Length: 222
Image 1 (cartoon, rainbow, N blue to C red):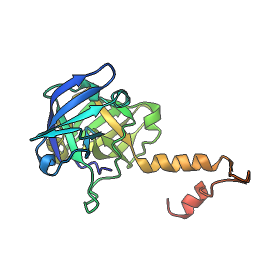
Image 2: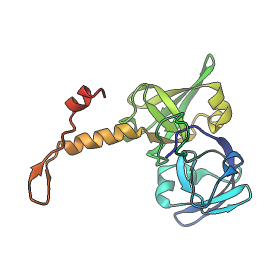
Image 3: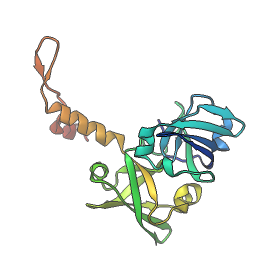
């Protein structure tokens, strides 16, 4: 589990491509402090596992499903990347719940300044926009951000100078792809509500239904 607070901008050293997969050699500095084989690291928001480790470099295997869902297939030697280690049990929760399981990609369609902020407008599929709400959370390239507006084709986020300076968003331009991960809470609530509308059968063929309803959630403060 991650929080969407980027620890550093690292770089791609080498990419080895297979028929439907790839291997990434990644260089870091801050995250290398206690990195071990088998650890999880979010690379542009994608949860990858440390498969090999040496000095200030590590390697990750990327399978075909990950390449289809994300923009990792576009990375090449020299590409800058956002890096975040998995959250420790005693760590501070600075962002929001980020799993590192990308829902898909979006495309930057506009970048403009608004006083000290930079506004990014990003187009996304209906499947992804379905879970985006105004003032809700979304992870963009692994960065925990707040949605300012959303419409039938795109959504917008406002980026503060610190985020622009310490992540790869400051290097992005119109037309670039970004990895998107919707807020976990919304997806789980919808799934529970959908399941609750269906009748389930237990081992004794007794029918039962979920008690999780919209009325229950409203009364509970959600």
